[in-house]
Image (tube, rainbow, N blue to C red; front, side, top):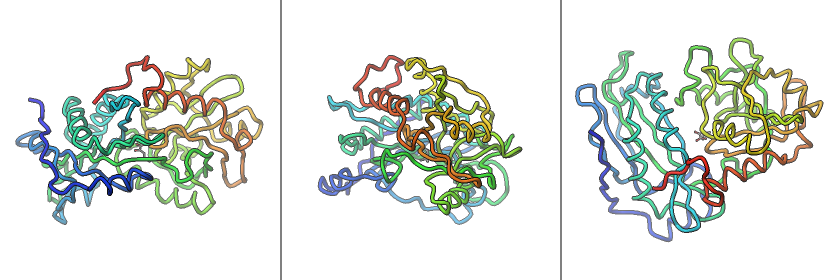
Length: 360
Ligand code: COI
């Protein structure tokens, strides 16, 4: 039977003035709405106890399994307000499907897609007033699931908590949509063959942090990871996929190999490519080819993509050999056009020819 997410309204919601102050300049991941969706799974009873409840802290036993063995997964998607006041999600079915794949990899229970979607619909409806109306802001939704059984044995938890929180969001990078700089890490890998790289699990992001620090120490905004076996093949950035645009009209991204996250934005761009007269290509790209391509100009543009990052131009690559400026360090035409097209669909300014939007 499908789960119901009835609203248990927050008796102390933020005032209009407090909410207005957040929405005036939300940043990314800093503020949260008045409610959250929750559900519990137990090995004996399956999914139950679902509701939309006041946003607030969890009380966790110090032995809670997730705190020790990181049995956890999450998703990221956004709700967009259109000019007519309607609110839409972008390809939430893809997030539901990926969360199910992540759950299987992390030995967590699958939350059926209809329950996943119901939790999001109910939360967005409850916190409708938090969906930004300004410019390119949106309501970022963060569904997640974790092992909430208090038990120190290493085995899949018998009790799991699902939750979805919502956060008004502006640009992910503090400088907005300016070309970012990328440090190519050959010291650290994000995910190994047979590991959890294709799953959206906290451990992958934890593994990326020291490399992100390394990038910052080199004055870069983001890190680029290569494969773990040879440190030779481009995989992804610390939380977003990567694309390059070649002078001969190819839009190239590393092929999925089990250790790269199957980004929803990555997939959408593959579909949009042909509409821009570009040939979408998924294949292995070596670091050597990338750097040489940037230096020779054959790689005309480079960009990062993800739900949070949308499409973010990359202006410079940096590695042990020095700096490699991409396309003069400016936002490339194709990057700008793909970004605009994606946002136009998401905000209802262009026709949704692929049926990607779901009205809440
Ligand atoms: C997203 O793009 O939604 C992510 O989960 C990535 C994270 C860097 C915010």
